[in-house]
Image (cartoon, rainbow, N blue to C red; front, side, top):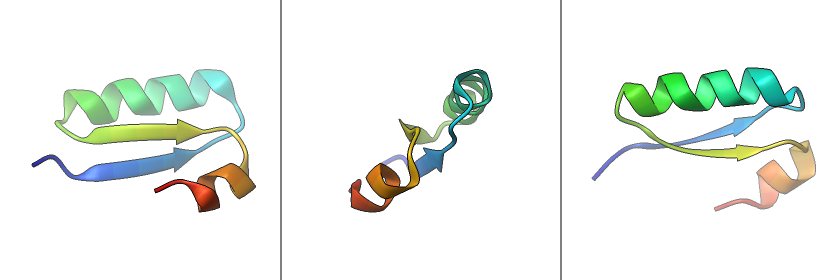
Length: 42
């Protein structure tokens, strides 16, 4: 089972790069662009 990482970042390009790099390293990544949504994510 992959480790799951939640990325909360309002800059779309930064979030995309983080997601790509973390997935390359083998992590499961969820991206939210607003802090409140990030806190509500599971």
